[in-house]
Amino acid sequence: MENFVFSLNSTLPIFLLILLGYGLKCLGMLGEKFVKEANQFNFTVTLPTLLFQDIMSADVAREFDLGFLLFCAGATTVSFFGIWLAAGKVLKNRRILGEFVQAAFRCSAAVMGIAFVRNIYGDSGMAPMMIIGTVPLLNIYSVLVLTFEAPENGESPKETKAAGRDRMREALINIAKNPIIIGILLGLLAALVHLKLPLFLERSVGYVADLATPLALVCLGAAFEGRKALAKMKPALCASLIKLVVMPGAFLPLALWLGYRREALVALVVMLASPTTPSCYIMAKNMGHEGVLTSSVVVLTTLFAAVTLTLWLFLLRSLGCI
Image 1 (spheres, rainbow, N blue to C red):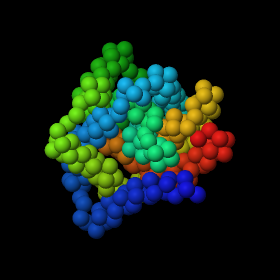
Image 2 (cartoon, rainbow, N blue to C red):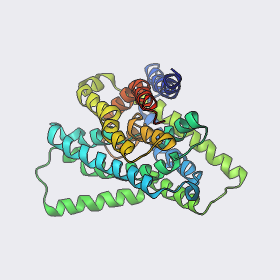
Image 3 (tube, rainbow, N blue to C red):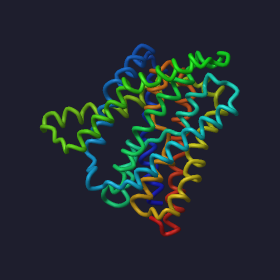
């Protein structure tokens, strides 16, 4: 029951902020222009600042565990390319393939990771290592799939080798100039050199970082289009199932076999079974995708995660692993 209450307290505020955004739109208080500008502000300022702050605060030297880091990176990589390959063969509408892949594999590692582990064990444990091993790849892979599977490519004939090279060049450029990835790299550099910001600057960074999640959720709700979402409910449910059930079901047994327990295992549960992060929606919109499927998956995984996350934690606790 304690885990259920904590899961509910973690996911219900997210859903309520999405609902708030939707309600404000219905009342005419939030228009399309505001949502577009706020999404751009989130993408270029608040989300990079949040990730910079989270990673900068990690004690990389003390918590460094190469094996654990490689497991996080490997599970993320296998999940991404596995989902991309399988979805490419199954999805008939290739215009939503990029959104589907991103929403199905990308978790709320940075937002929920440290909070979950601290709630159970009193300190962050291996959560910072999980964030460092996962979050940069989540963003790089997201840029990759959203570039290669841009909507305008969905109805194109088979591309030539030259077109493929052009798209790879475009993807690399998008990765290099992506504000979120830049924020992650700067945060990692700051963590490695043990950068300590002056108090006034630390507080200013904190204020900007604190804007990221609530603003993203309100904008997601304000942009939510129920009729369009219903038309994409089948792929949205499929992506949600992959995110909350298939991924943890595939990799948690391997983590147990490798001997991960307690804080490390809880960090992996968050990495594999947490809801799809709202920043998926912001990145999809800012890279030319419709965003309807992404917002639907964020809403569905947020609703269901209180139950599924609790069940995973309950199962592992029953087995004496956490």
